[in-house]
Length: 411
Image (cartoon, rainbow, N blue to C red):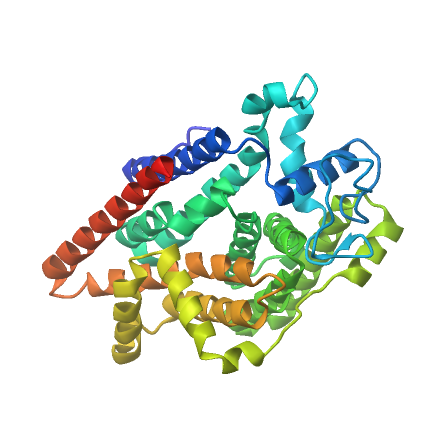
C-alpha cells in the first residue's frame, strides 16, 4: 500500500490538477443550479431519457427499443431520431445512466420534490466531465510534461462547451461519447506501447483489453456513429507496434469482443431486442454535400471558437509552428491532431446523426495537440516571452468564461 501512495502519483502536480478539476465541477454545478432554478419542468429530451431508463430498470422493456407509448408514460414523447420506436442514434446507455440515480430516491418523482430529485440525473454526466478531464490531464502530462498537462487541463476546465456538456445545459449528453472516444484512442496507443515487452499478449494485457473494450462500448453506446473509433484504434495499434502487428490484432479483436459483450449487456442481454436495435441503428449516415457549402465551414469555426475562445489565437499559432518547425512534428503531437481533424470532418459530414458529438469529441484532442506544441516552444530560448504570453492568455480565457457564467445567471 505504501508503494502505491508515492509522491510520483500523489504529489503537488496532482494536487493542483485536482483543484483545477474542482473549478470545472463548480462551474458545471453552477449551470445546473441556474437551470433548475429557472426551469419549472424538464427538457423534453431529458424527460424521454429518464422515462425510458426507468422503464428498463423496472423491467418493463428496453429503453428506446422500442419507445414506450406516450399514453403509458408521462415522461415520454416521440423522438425525431426514432424509427418504428427504435432510437437510431443511441443505445439505452444514456437513458440508463440518466435514470440510475433516481432509483435511490425514496419517494415518488412528483413536482413538489422536483427541486431535490432533478439534481440526480445530472450527476453521472458531471462525473463523466470530471473523468474526461482527469484522463486529459493524465495523457497530456505523459506526452507534454507538467507544463503541457496544466495548459491542456486549464483549457479544458474553462471550456464553455465542455462545462455546458458536463452540466447537460441546453444540450445533449455528448460528454459520454467524448469520454469514450478519448479513452478508446489513448488506451489503444498505451496498449500498443506495451507490446514491445516480450510477454504473453492477452494474459499480461487483460486489464488494458478490458479497459479498451469498455471504452469502445461507452463511445458506441452513447452514439452509434462513434463506431469509427473501432478501426481508428486498430490503426494506432498497428502503427505504434509495427514489429508485433499480429499481437496488436489479437488484442484489438479481444477488446472488440469485450466491447460487444458490454454493449449487449446495456440491453440487459435481450438478444432479439439487441439485434433489432442494431438493424435500425445509423452507424454513420455520411453526407458530403456539407463540404460544398461555405457557411458550414464558417459555422464549424464559430463553434470551435465558442468551445474554446482561446483557439482563436493558440490554434493558428500551434498549426503554424507544427508545419514550419520539424521538431514539433512527432507522434505525440501528430496523433491528437489527426484525430481532432478527423472528428471535425465527421461533424461536418454527419450534421443530422451525431455531428455535435463528433465536434465535442474533437476538442480534447485539439487541447492535447495545442499543449504539446506550446510545451515544445517553452523549451526554446524564448521561454520567458512565450510563458508570459501563455499565462496572460490563460488568465484572460478563464476570466472570460467566469464572466459568461455570471451573465447566464442574470438572463
